[in-house]
Length: 491
Ligand SMILES: Cc1cc2nc3c(=O)[nH]c(=O)nc-3n(C[C@H](O)[C@H](O)[C@H](O)COP(=O)(O)OP(=O)(O)OC[C@H]3O[C@@H](n4cnc5c(N)ncnc54)[C@H](O)[C@@H]3O)c2cc1C
Image 1 (cartoon, rainbow, N blue to C red):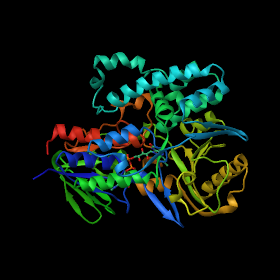
Image 2: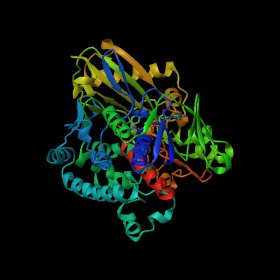
Image 3: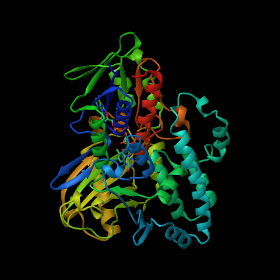
Image 4: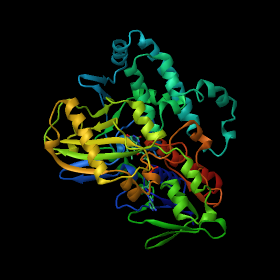
């Protein structure tokens, strides 16, 4: 009989681990606490609007192609992709908006307008970024991160300097560009990794290659279409996905997990994969003697930010918004200090607005707009209705002023989501949105390990372990853990 694997959680990483294990011949069951799959990438419908609850940027289309290709499929078997142009816009102030074109020649021309002569440096910067993307995505992220020895391979060691592991993103960008707005454009993608440009290795300019050369895409119907595709693929492979099954305990007699207990059932397991937040699995589902890390260890980690989100239905079409809109009309450095160094509700936050209905008629009723507003916040802040409303007003005032229209009086649907919801819905440590930050000291083998040191058949996957936060890394994390299990315990 095939070995039975229980995967906890149906986010991108849990689904990826499950399908990869099923393909290798294991008998796989996913237990998911919520009533829909997808984890942080769930969707919900209200008053004719269809909201993606988490991710909205589809970057690195090659990672999705490679994911489906392992199973003889293509993304287009499950959803239709559209490249966005402009990729996104950045509001630096009223009448000061940078529209970032998809086309490389147009992008170079834009750089020249902001900083004469800078297109040459852009080409140099992107050529280096391409090298990092290729080595980073082919070699680094595929490593399980058990030990530093995985990186001892001469080619990789020699390339550590070329990869700029020891230079910060902020220093790298400033060496080549002087214009503050171009600098902000080039530093923005590392925010996805959950740390500041000063604290992120310049390796991650590979994100700029993903952004500028590979492009910003959108799956028609919404980001949740990826989850629907992955669920249907998992089911084709024989994975059982059981919803409304909240795991309460992993039972570990003699250092070996033997069953997983939910609120109303027990599941035999030969192998357990924790695809829920690592901290939750360790600290809440295991007895203290079976935990690899202490509460103190977790408290010392740099978590990626949490967020205050608003899902809004607007009863008219809006002007001056593209699909992705970044509002950098406030001091980024000040907001970053309030996220990382001196955690507090920010005085003047930067924020992001996604208007998917600009591209996709399926996500809003006719002549209406679907808006998703995100304010990055420090994890672990006290979250109250009063604070949420205060920030709603701050953001609405700026949004109305910068785009020159009345929005507030046209809101016909509104829902907010922040720390308390992240904790309640996903068991997110300190209410984090994007897991563990990819700082230099939390990269690769310095992350919480994919394999438990205390429980012989317990593994972890997802955005708190290798390779890190974001949809593409979560997909890869599931693949890497499935390989590790296969190497250790054949089905
Ligand atoms: C607001 C927001 C915006 C984002 N934007 C982007 C973006 O634009 N692009 C991008 O690439 N990434 C983005 N991300 C990051 C990306 O969404 C995540 O990195 C990724 O979805 C994490 O997947 P995961 O499988 O690690 O975790 P999750 O999606 O959290 O999956 C874990 C699952 O475990 C379940 N679970 C928890 N506890 C239990 C239990 N006890 N029993 C059973 N099940 C349990 C949870 O319900 C959940 O379904 C964003 C994230 C957020 C929150």
